[in-house]
Image 1 (spheres, helix red, strand yellow):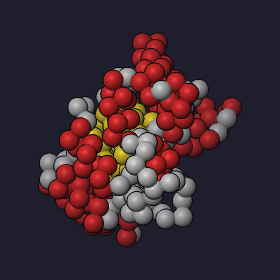
Image 2 (tube, rainbow, N blue to C red; image 1 turned 120 degrees about the horizontal axis):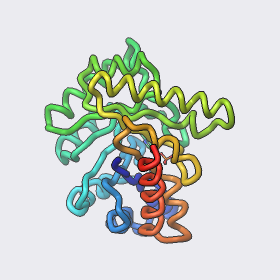
Image 3 (cartoon, rainbow, N blue to C red; image 1 turned 45 degrees about the horizontal axis):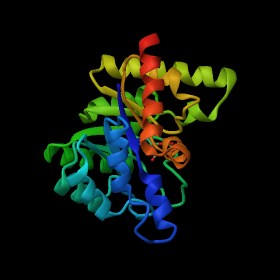
Length: 243
Ligand code: PXP
């Protein structure tokens, strides 16, 4: 299991004052020292947190890998093709949302065509491609059809529910992970995962990569980034050894 740390919210704090601290590039180094297997950043069209400069510097600094989240917008895809991160994860983007609210809509329509075009360009640049989708069969089959290397299953509904509903969402993630793997997609997961809820998701055997941001950046305020990453990595390791 790989743990990729999403450091967008370090940039959110910086952008609150439009100054130069805290620097997400320095935090990425500490996350790696704490055991991160990769660094994830979302370069949004509105540049509300991560800036072009951050992605450029991370590409030079990160010793593990960079996973760039991006919408299927021509401008950002061009930048990705120029910088060539190891992996690009296509996500839907709405200006009014606080965070990515749902997976890509891969039913016939404009988002599908734009996603396909972006995928072809990214793959052509030699970048491993992943699609952020809701954990449902239709989206998984669409991702296979489009030739994606991986899917990232949206864990937001799992994270936002409790009790029986949460157990239902976990079952949904299990089914989706197993179908995606059977269809030869690599399976990633993320969104809303915390120190309290990550265990059952990390125990799903088909999942090979978790992308976690807000909870780790929040904990790092108290413990520092290295310790925050180490603690999450340990929970995930235990979940895998008990699976
Ligand atoms: N994966 C994707 C595709 C995301 O858009 C995000 C949020 O930026 C995450 C994972 C991380 O979510 P969180 O910050 O809730 O851990």
